[in-house]
Image (tube, rainbow, N blue to C red; front, side):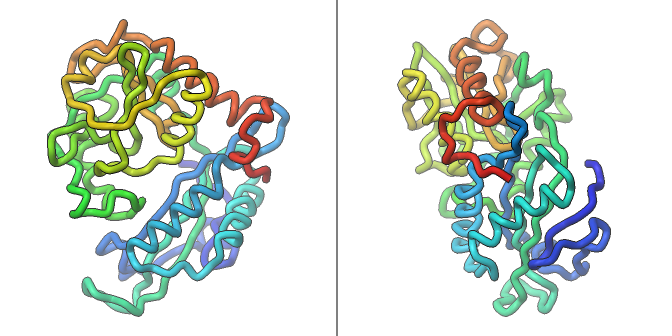
Length: 305
């Protein structure tokens, strides 16, 4: 990651190297914190727009509500700060990371009076799973690590500590030579990838796991469902078994970082023809048209900087 110029921390824009935390920072020890990943795109018009900024910041507040953390800034102030960070770092496109964390006043699991901090970082980030992955698709493997039960960890929160589960799965499959892990829920049904939601296509119908399962209610996921229905496809939410993925005509992942990434192989089984399928290609093209192109469609999804 390139070092840039500035980081927003607790209401102040600081030089990049001045934004530091103490080694006793509670969140670093126990994982109680929340974050978002947000993309800003340079559009065909030359303007920079942040994609679905309001929804991302609202989810940050929802995650903190789950954790009983009170963010000491308004939603509107955080939105403004996200734009300011891009400007301060001279970025016309990039990735934004708002992070809420607990300070260092007290150790131990119960630290109800620790200060709640908020930082916003921006950096340049290309295709998360690689440019080749966007164009040709990736190889995935079902991980031996299971997504936690919905009553074990609160899956609807984008919570710092949750991602240990994803990291273990990611390391497992990367060490085995694959690009990404697909994770099952505690009942053995398909949940999501390590940082992406999952869709499959079979007989012209697009299917995705239900939000009643232990998956993050992804903002890109919602965008994909909206765009797919606009294009005339039927989209169904529900249970998907592992072997249904093997016989799918198409599988793709989506997320802020991953955008729309096709999957060409799962567990050494070729998906469809082993290339980007027509449904995935149409949705991917429409998505990039909305975020990068010149269309005025879905203007409410874009916040100009």
